[in-house]
Image 1 (cartoon, rainbow, N blue to C red):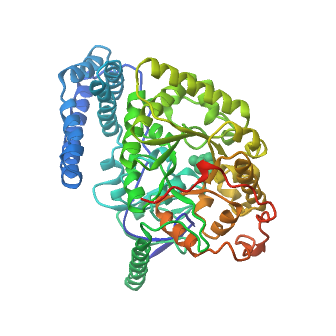
Image 2 (spheres, rainbow, N blue to C red):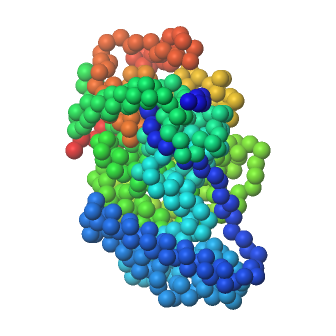
Image 3 (cartoon, rainbow, N blue to C red):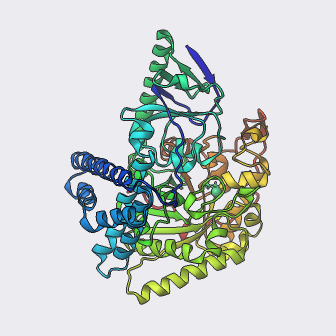
Length: 579
Ligand code: PEP
Ligand code: MG
């Protein structure tokens, strides 16, 4: 037996065989090829594999979700054989002498643009399908498809590091857990692991290629992995895993119950998601809505700029499936640790302090408008809100809202349907906290991003594993900023939520409630534990001290909420009744 140690990002046990994952080069060459015959064969092979994948997806969806949902995969399989599409790819290979990857990507982008420009909404929607099938073939050609990355049986993935763009593409049904040599507990990869409810071990220096195919157990409680565990150890960890399942089953009893404290205060408990794949978890865990849809995962999941049509379909599916529940979609927060090759962002010395999120959107207006148009169109299909990330000034909020208004005018002129949307500001920089009164005048809600707020307040790069000993997730400065933000929001009659990871920290739930928070948006698996915690709290009793677990000592409440009794938000802050 070998033991590896590291940092755990989720308390849980994963048991299964190890699969070593090696990074693939995903840059597409633009240099002409000499052997076009070989490229044609590579394309045909990828085409056949993609057809087989879509057929398998059709059969799976037919069994699990019915004919209507399954039909899309049937259409994809047929489109993969469409003569115009196939001829276009072959021509690029033979006439322009380009590699199969380049040909598939170029032909896919061209055909998607043709569909997107059509008047008929049904044909417009096919643009997203073309992007999907081109993507499926590209994945196969580049070895980044599920079969190549994860194999065909559920396993524990072991890698040097996993970028959010890789993690987001993993097939959850084949992923028991993952272990990486690098990584930090607040990175988006770790956040994804938590939202997928998958035990993961990071900073495990012992990982070794010889582990491939061996039986292993990730023990998230003790932040270690056992490779080839002894029979006795395996048995005791299996028992622990069963106990976890029983505890989870007990929490199911809270479904359908309100998020109400013993003295009668109700708040919203929403879910954080990254795409349509997470909607099932939102429903299973009975979230009141979605408080943070990290829309950049739609970009990370794509090998080229996702078109308006593609995004519209993605947002519409989520909003429509969850209607009438509210879905708050955060506009693209790309940059820092979330990068995609096709955006060709410059390498930066300080990416967290650099060109990211709203800064990209405000300077690449067409890029931003593509997303805003897709969001506005999707708003016609349910209860959609949007919020802007990384805001530091009122001017940025104004600029973003002006571009949004411009999109509304354009879409209205085009006769496109739109719903009413709430527009919010993420409060995740100290500057935003300090100008929160001004921002609150100009938006419908605040959502506090405690991950970035902690990073910027404490000057601790959340990607830098070396800084973890200096991190205090309950830093009084951050707690005070949260209180200041809630008060500022309420002074101006808007509701205030928390969507950073701290929202799921049940040792702080009472503190947040006493501060007057209106909504906590957490990873889906934390919804029921947070609900349980809320239901055990009595705000009419004196406040318990907040325990600073890092320092091992009790911190006073960031503020005495009663002394500063801020008016609760007006109409919009009301918690919505449960279905
Ligand atoms: C945050 O910063 O707290 C947040 C919710 O956004 P992200 O973690 O995606 O940066
Ligand atoms: Mg953030």
